[in-house]
Amino acid sequence: MRLTHCAPLALLIPLYLLGLLHLPVSFAQSPRAQELRIGGIFDLTGGGALWGKTERNSFLLACRDFETKYPNYKVTPIVEDSMFSSRHTVTALHKLISIDKLSSIVGATWETTVPMLPICETKRVVCLSPSYHGKEYYSRPWSYNFTAWFDDREYARVLAKHMNGSGIKRVAVFAALTPYYDSLVESFLSDTTSTVVTNQRMVLEERDFRSIITKVPKDVDAILMLLDNAGQIQAFLKQWSEIRSDRPPVFSDDLIVYLDPPDDIHRFGFDFFYSYPVFDQKTADEFTKRYTQQYGVPPEGSSGAVTYDETMILLGCMKKTDPQMSVRECVASTIGYKGYSGEFSFNGKQTVTNRTIGVKKLTQS
Image (tube, rainbow, N blue to C red; front, top):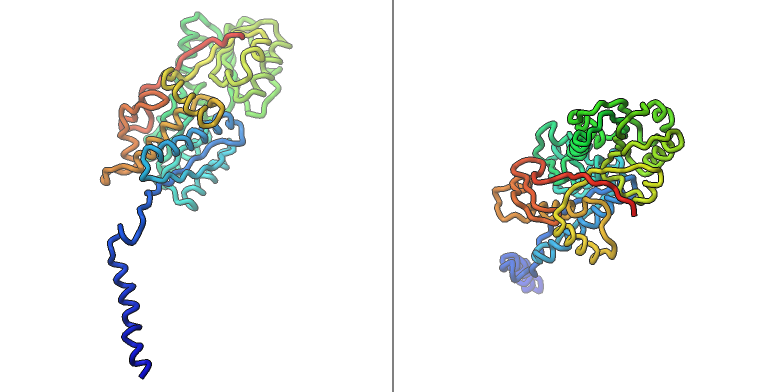
């Protein structure tokens, strides 16, 4: 008899729980911010760490600012270290895609982004490069790869134009073997009117340049030095000054300004000219102020503002209100974006317009 009386109560319990499932969501759940998960791959421990750490910090700064601007969204950034290695970059990319299940990524630093391109395309992951824009971007069309960085070819084109206008007739070329410097050398050779008396390429580990220095003709009018790191550049300058008495002007990209300039460079007796990305000074100063307020130190390198802008664009497209437009299509349709790195547009392409490279002479302190 006791079981008979308990049976109706037992039936009521599941009916009560079933009724809870049909309560309005606003009543059953507390409001939660929508999560946006985004990846970043930057060189934090390798040869590009000076720029990579600034890119990482700028990426995180943009994520914070986006949350502040859109409080209904929670941004979850996941950062990996490329170690300035193609192998580690690919490993980091696969981790973000396969384990973290991300489909929107900013990175990697400099030319370590190159091995990412076919993977991003195959996996249909939107990838934005903050500091590389080499020939890989214009040698074939991409759907998922974008870069807001300055055209690397222009780093060499403006140097060639400067030399052409300065009456330089004979130039010696020394460059590292990397995808970035491959683009620069090709661009320079196609634009220069000077005679290239020597064109030497060397691996990143090379430190002994004495043999090739002695073979350079004495009447060379200029040196195009596109070496990859401080050790190579300092070794080259020191060895030239020990072997030769002539001091032709040296042309380089803006890596030269990060080598404790100018005294540690000018002490060898050379005049230096370098190509550099031109930013709108007002917005560049605004970014430097914003970055310094957050981290207590100014940004290093030139790519922090670009990283910030790319991150904001990507997050904005992930938040997009038009359900018919994919993140990829949203990024490609960016026109007239006004960011810390200036105003630029993708105009349906994988690279931006409205970027300018200039030439400066490195002055002594």
